[in-house]
Image (cartoon, rainbow, N blue to C red; front, top):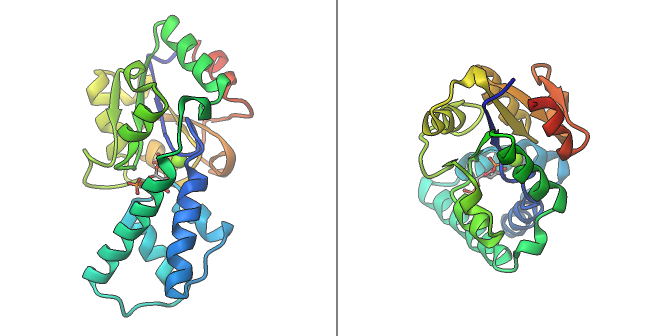
Length: 212
Ligand code: B16
Ligand code: MG
């Protein structure tokens, strides 16, 4: 049914979403901004500077200059990278690794479609970077999700049409991006509630039954 599966990274392949939470909480506390799970949910799949804008807006902070924002975004990333230092192959769920292998074994191409500029570093840490046929991430796009660019670039890299590809996402912004780009999607977590999600995934391994 599908020729390719394009995976979001944070919150789908790995659990770096909790690292993003810790790093943003550190910055929010420093500047006296409110930060909680609800606000964090709005940042899933959203690029770094846009995420900072959401946090500032939630607390009505509107006096920061572009330079100050860039400084805060970089400080968040430094903290986040420090947390990533501790990542290792053991942090990859066995069910994720098994599913990626199974998909490849039945001839499905697999790609990453992530807003993160740190995607390749994370894939290297998990020692799965060589499994993917294409990696589209925050370093090759001009527009973050919900713009479909990250997924259309991944499909182009794979040489597969959007209509023949399935996007796997945990974020509302990611399902929106998939839908706007003409991709079917499988949603985990928050993403399951998007009205346009094609499949609601309870277990990662259920993907095999969907694509077969
Ligand atoms: P970075 P995904 C997204 O990754 C995260 O969900 C989001 O929280 C983060 O702000 C964004 O990447 C940018 O990440 O700061 O590492 O460049 O879910 O699209 O894989
Ligand atoms: Mg995600």
